Length: 151
Image 1 (tube, rainbow, N blue to C red):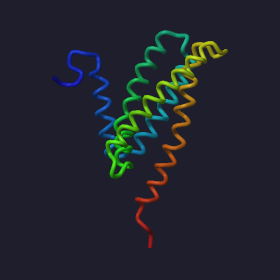
Image 2 (image 1 turned 60 degrees about the vertical axis):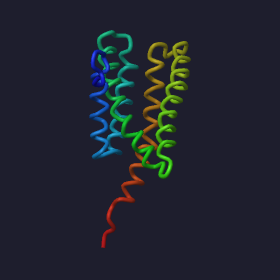
Image 3 (image 1 turned 90 degrees about the vertical axis):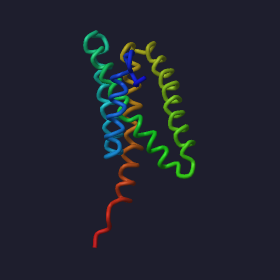
């Protein structure tokens, strides 16, 4: 059976595959773009969370963008794990799960804050923006290592 056949997961598999293909060519640009796009979408969601149509559109976009970076991040985890690729993959997926659990808990707490319905999106935007710091740093470091020496 093909992935997504007979279910609503077809579009997510397609985006996952596109993310993987983009990541093959430009892994760091793909992860940075995914994190930056997630940040922008979550900020917009925080602003328009009180309106049904924009919320539905933004949540759909968030789901699509969320799958762009996943295969690339797992591949990078495996690459940097060296002699322990299984450990690299497991730690990457575990980090996703831990981030989802802790982020959901913190975001849930914001529902009782003055932010109310915009709270979870605001927390998500902050976390996604913070993700850009190590992502861009790693891209810059790796870019320096792969650049040919002049002279």
